[in-house]
Length: 426
Image (cartoon, rainbow, N blue to C red; front, side, top):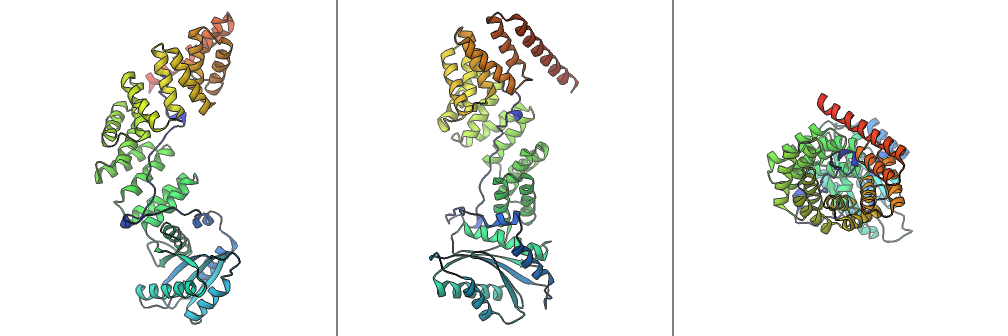
């Protein structure tokens, strides 16, 4: 029986996802910011709420305004920019044309209206930034958003400006960016990094409302669906990508992964082989292709790809574990022991490697007490695995503890029978 069948419960589901970048500026080098200002949106401060409410309560001559967030990077530690920002604001704007507020140290929010067109508003914004920069030799990163825009509320305009500022920060501390689909994608990726997968999926959907054929957004949405176990929806998104770009390697691999998770081994193999033909130097592709081949009992082919995966990432306990299982099947016990031991050193809770190492020791008829300890631990980690219980029972037999051996064999048989019944009734 194959130990790799239930991959989903192994928590080693590695979808591929490209980092956000400005698709229209591919020639420019982009570097993610050290800190994301959008993190403040997770816990709205009193200052943010106050500014949003001021925007909401302001009676505008026309129902339009621009919301801007500034992040000031001062080269002098004790340099106070609050007075400068206030002075600049009152120099540029007459009473009733705008409002501003300090959000945090070096972070300011501004909203203004009473401009004829967007170009004029951009000129005003540029003037503010230049006046402040030249006055105190500071760098100012700027994010801006328009109201009205799509279905976004006045409250949303501040959030969107913050997202645009994180977008701008990819291009340096003195950049300016207006809110767009890429700003949404960057915020979605940040939520993804923080583990807020469902919230990230909502952002990606918003981004696709603005840019329906964006393959990176579509793939990212598919990844989120995959991670929250909505595999049919994930499959649909990856297929959409391939409908736009048939050689998009991330989505080809991800589609193979979804089929692997849903027991579609032949289709999984088809997509993974295609991904491998495009680029055979991606760890996740080599590992999953080897894993699928191993589950199909094609150990020789599997070994080739898993070895390549280990060349790309020598610290993969998953790859070491499969290699160990192949050596165990081939009765190459010292090699099996070596690979299982390395896997356990990397991940002490790797139940498959613990059971495999116990089996290898039992077959060598040495370290039987250590083998027993490993076998017991594997069963504690995965009590429903009949192979683990069978191996534990065999070690009990070797130690002539027949009652405990019988108990493990009975539990293993009962589990195997239940699994077969589930398959037949499915």
